[in-house]
Length: 93
Image: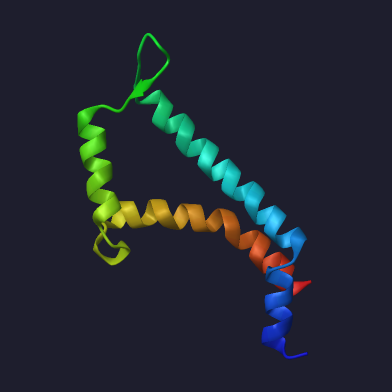
């Protein structure tokens, strides 16, 4: 088996996918907490995103990574750092 085949096997294993999925869920839950904390809750329980945040996030959505501000890039890098320890660990066992 080639080294690239072995890497692919390890990265696509059920164990690795589950570990990374757990990290992704934590990342998503963190974002949802942030979002909910910055929204207005209406009487029926719906959330309304303030216009200034909606506008800011829409700009970020449409902006390719290389064009983001350094602060926005660092925020994305922080998310990658959540995944790297798992990826490194499964590749170096």
